[in-house]
Figure 1 (tube, rainbow, N blue to C red):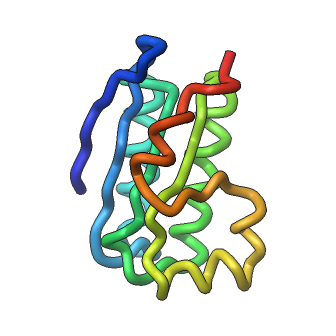
Figure 2 (cartoon, rainbow, N blue to C red):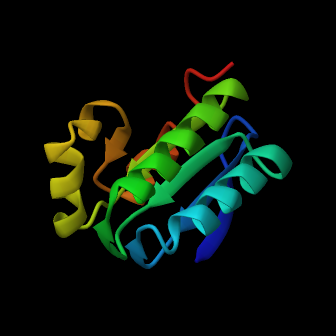
Length: 118
């Protein structure tokens, strides 16, 4: 999993995580721990780039929801971007596309990743 850190114009750090392959029962727990670590130790602002994830199951969605809640508790932000077309269907069928802030590109997600956060 790739991890990059950016600093927005307001001086806040934003972590971009880019998992690859599948986000399912075999990988979701490790991803969840990575989200927790990033939010607790590096930045409360997270962007998850799903462009290289071609499959998400309920475990993967659960890890994303948990990350969003952790960021919210820390008064941060949690955005998803670049959702692979095959994975996007899961968000639409479960109506999670209305729960998450989903952006078409990483640049769009980064542009406002700390806006509205206290």
